[in-house]
Length: 116
Image (tube, rainbow, N blue to C red):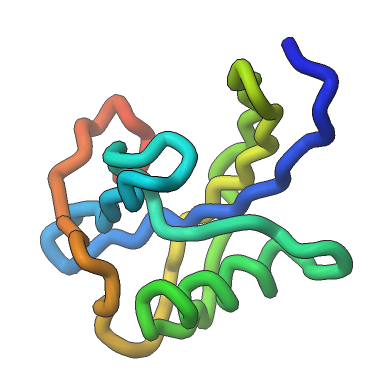
């Protein structure tokens, strides 16, 4: 465990009509670069989690979050930082996700808890 401050991050789980989940490839030069992630980002000081989620989806994907529900909250300790991860299911959105170099829809396993 490290003594650094906690980085608060929010991500959205977005399913298409085929119940596939949208994931994005992290830029190689970023922390955990080259790994797949749910779209989202840091919650800025003074922002609500929902506001940050919508802001990140607009910035990264060109979509607006219209309705979402909280799935879980996870705290993870990396060697260089602590992360508090808020995970939300996107229930309704407007626009077509685009803009990232590498976006992919993939089929989650029912045990992942993403499918209702």
